[in-house]
Length: 293
Ligand code: FAD
Image (cartoon, rainbow, N blue to C red; front, side, top):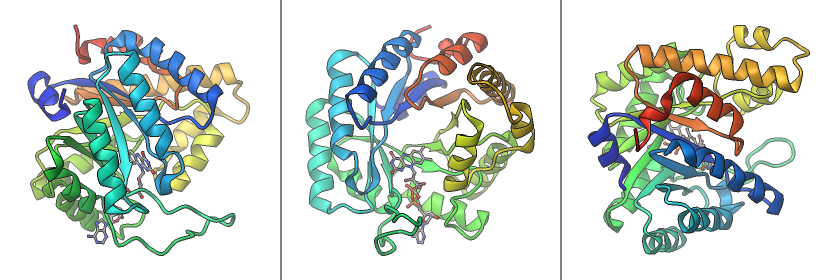
């Protein structure tokens, strides 16, 4: 089912993001996580795409397997940074044949060398261009990424929201946020979006933290900020079990505050693990946001 239609009809949603695994062990982990989370009747699930083609085949394979083995509404991500128009079209026609209704359209990031420098010239293509390519190809509902703290390559928040608006005006039907931990970034983003006339649904994406050191590195790479209070709450020596509990507690508080402020669409970054996400859903009774009551 098309996500924009689903969001319009229900006014709420619960969804999960998975990444395409690199090997058989990762695939086993992913599919046992899917088995656990299918129980919550998500409105949709999404599967990420390795920029530069790294795991693009895996994405198609995983999407196909999810569709064959479950009844989940499955949305592949596609990035355009290092791909020809022909290869993008071939992938999109392949998804149509599989019955896919939704595509997450992204620019992606250039692959980096050992020192962290991009190994290809700055892209001339943006997600906006990919949205324009997908739009006439036949009936996909199109999602795009939005950044509550602004994208890290954009000089300021005003420019960020105008470029985001341009990408949406190219034909996007809904947005999914980058992870954020301070809800004030999200509320301020929604205010900026409203001000420039963005009126598509924006889905708040939640990242339950399991490992604070790993999360700090991840945040640095994608330009999201990690509140000091979070770092303090984990402390220096939280065991793995304690860290899981703290991550669940913080994510529950974050979602509670969002719900209190009227937000009803939640996307969880699962990192292919189900326990934290399942516990957050149970604690907050979020299953009501999915497809079934
Ligand atoms: P764009 O919207 O194209 O923006 C990229 C940058 O270019 C921004 O700084 C923007 O302001 C600037 N820009 C846009 N248009 C113009 C213009 N006309 N002129 C000048 N500057 C412009 N990455 C993956 O590799 N695979 C995934 O599956 C994946 N999934 C993601 C899912 C979500 C929900 C999010 C938030 C991110 C995801 N990413 C993924 C990361 C994403 O690819 C990176 O953040 C990437 O740097 C930007 O992608 P974008 O689609 O937001 O790009």
